[in-house]
Image 1 (cartoon, rainbow, N blue to C red):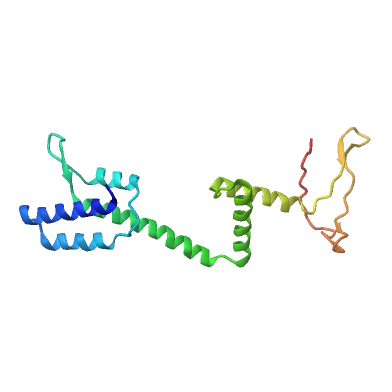
Image 2: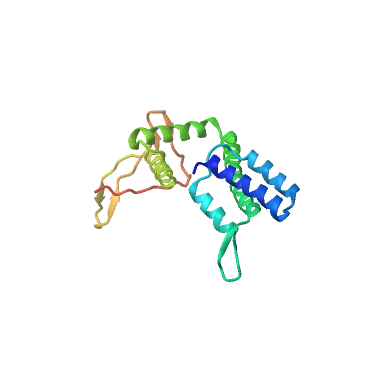
Length: 185
């Protein structure tokens, strides 16, 4: 049964309930208006099953007798609302990022699609960020060999804190600096 056939069957059932059981016509009209406002895309199977489970009517002996169409429609509407809120918040955030951030994001997605032929996951983004940070950290490093001093202790020869490429000192006397030691095998 197609989604259109399902909606037509629901409409027919609403008409029957209004005419046979005297259900509230105004509520039925509201439900019809809601159904007309639904997107043309089909409801996902998982959402449809959850809505049915949430709107099932049962007798006292737990026998299923049908669905509460108001609850079913409300469940679907709530899921659509939440989906729209996520998208609205995503777009709001996208509009607030800087050009540099947008370029970084686009570069990441392009590289990932080229390499793996799939959309990246959150873990992919985290790993990308870690690698990027490591590259930034190692960008201005100077390689030195660990030696042994006269007392038998390991040490590294003094390192000049001067960037010869840019012609500027990296620190001046009295500055406190942090040295990162990365052992390579």
